[in-house]
Every structure is written in C-alpha cells, then in structure tokens.
Amino acid sequence: MDNIFVAGVSMTAFGKQIDLSIKQLAAAALADVLADAGAEISDIQAVFYGNCVQGHMEGQDMVRGEIALREAGISRVPVINVENACATGSTAFHLAANYVQAGAADIVLAIGAEKMYSSDRTLMFSAFDGAWDVHNVALSRDALIRMGDGVPVPPGTTSERPYSVFMDVYAGFCRLHMKTFGTTQRQLAAIAAKNHGHSVHNPLAQYRKPFSIDEVMNAAPITYPLTLPMCSPVSDGAAAAIVCNAAGLARLKGSQRRAMRVLASVLQTGSDRAPEDYANHVTAHAARRAWAQAGIGPAEVSLAEVHDATAMGEIIEVEALGLTPLGEAGPRAERGELSLGGRLPVNPSGGLECKGHPIGATGLAQVFELVTQLRGEAGARQVGGARIALAQNGGGIVGIEEAVVAVTVLGHSRSARSAPAHR
Image 1: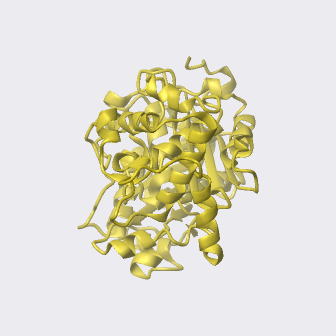
Image 2: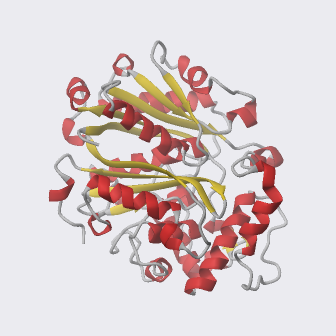
C-alpha cells in the first residue's frame, strides 16, 4: 500500500432509522464524506458500494449501488456492488484501495449502507440465514454447537424470543474457549461492560447506556453464556471513506494533514482446521499478512476496532491478531487493560455490540473510527497519542470459523517503521 491515503470518512447515526430510506442513508454518508475530504462528486472516479440485505428485505438486487446513489448524484462512473457478509464494508474499502494502487483511478469512494430493521422479526432475522452453507445447514449448526459440548448450560439461559442463528454459533465458540482456556462468563461481561462504557462517548452509537459487569451478567439471556448486552443489535446506517493516491490527495481541498495512510489492507478466506487450532484461525493468517505488509508488529498498535458481533468475538479476534496471547484477552479485559486508558484500548467506538451493526456499513464505520482517533478528533473517547490503528472485520461462516476476514491498518503519513510504539 504505497502512498494510498484515506482523505475523508463519514458515518451516519446507527440504529433503528424507521423514517429514512436506504437512499437517504447513503446520500447522508456521501454528503458527509465529500465534505470531510474537501471533495466534489465530480472528483469521484469509481465507487465500491457495500450492501447485503436489500435483496432480502426489499427485493432490490443486482444494481443496488447504482439505484441507491443515483439520486445523490453518482453517475457516469464505475459503480461496483460488493457483498461479502458482515465483512462487506471492509471489502469495499479493500477493493477501493487496491483499485487506486493499481493505477485505475486517483480518487475512489467506498460506501456501505443497510436497512435491516423491520417490525417483521422473522423477515429481519432470516436475513442472516444465507451466510453459511445452505446445503448443509443442519450439519453446520450441529458441528458448531458441538464445540461447546462438556460445558453445562444452566436452565433458563436460552431466550424464547427469536434471535439470529449466529448467536448459537457464537455460543459454541464461547463454550469451546471456556473449556480450552478457562474463560468465564464474567470476563465476557467485562468485555460488554467496557464497550457499553465506551459507547456513552460516541454520539453516533446505537446504544449509549452504561452497564456494570453485574448488570450484563444478570441481563436477559440469549443463549448461554451470552446475555443481551453481549450481542450486537440489528441496525440501519451508512458509512463511507474516500481513498486516494498522492496525486488525488493534492487535488482535494481538505487538509492533507488529516489524511491517513493505508499501511495494510488484507482480505483472507478461511480454511479447514481443528477447532482448537487457534494459531491457524483465519484472522491469525490475515494478521500475519497485514503485519508483513505494514512492516510493523502488534506491539506498535495504539488501538483496535474488532468484530465483536458478540463479546466472545472480541476475545477471539484480539487473540488471533496477536494483540494478546491466547487465553489472555478475557483476563486482560477484566483487569481493564483493553479499556480506554488501558494498555491497548479495543473498540473505543463501543464496537458492534453498542455502536451497531448495519452489516454493509460496519467495516467502513470501523475505518471512520480509526481515522477519527488518528486525527485526535474522538473527544471523550480519544486514545492518547494514537499513531497506528487496526480494524478487523469478519463475515459469514464456513466450517468452524468466519468465511472471510479483513484486516486494515492505518497510520499517520510518515513511515510506519519510524512511528513510536504506543506502549
């Protein structure tokens, strides 16, 4: 990623945006990212548009980006539609960065928008049903849930209300990690309480109510050991980033000092492995490629945004990225090391659990947070001295792990190798 920059970012408020259409959400993110970069629509030479569920929810297939963005003024340029499960937004960013790196354009827009919330809960939750092998649903579900065999499930700890099938998947991940490393439900609650505390300071987050560890433990159950505050909500929202090279950056009217360099952008699909073989987790493979591409190691990261569709997701991903040793993320969270003011702040935005998770926009919302932090513009949730920031975004399930993972590393414009370590 030589001389590839993020010149502008934007994010709408995430939540239940009942009165806003997908076109309105996309237009709002577009207007804000153009303003942030000092760009005009005429500067944009190509668009990568991320969306996953409008076909399911509204019947809008095949030309989603061309439809969503036309009224906002996007026309006469390539619009590439991107769908890659919950990693869609970061995949759009990855493709935009590589498009610029390949010399196909100087200034490219990556944008994701999603309208997921519905009063029809069956329609809403079934939007996730295609994110694994639909030819082997029972086999996949049983294999994932069996990972938790041997961990007793207390009575009354499974919700009678509908919820996403992926919560059962994460519960299997939880119980396996409990058996392997001694992770506790209280450590999961510490992750969730931390992220809810961070989200209080994020005006764009879906949930901004703090929870104590005990309140998370005693909240309504989803499926053991997960309780409601440990799980990401269904969300509407949009986010965007403008990616450019040095020539494109020079043409924009925004401050070049606020542009951040793309140090690494990696996309990785999973592979077959034993459930306990965490060293070969898809995120671990992606992380090794990202560290090599950026020319840095985990110790130089100032903050991280990771895919916490549940609190267990944060534990798995932090460890797979090498930000903590295997089995240590839970204890470190309980000691406050992953909180703002701690050794390595994780999900200062509030994460997916609290900020929200409109899946086509999620990865770009992570980029929004990284850039905001690196600029020193995050207000009360600001990580002091942030120089290098990382995002990890996963999507779907194949076998016993995510089908796809994206890892993005951003930093200030000077060389990553000369940047001071955060700790």
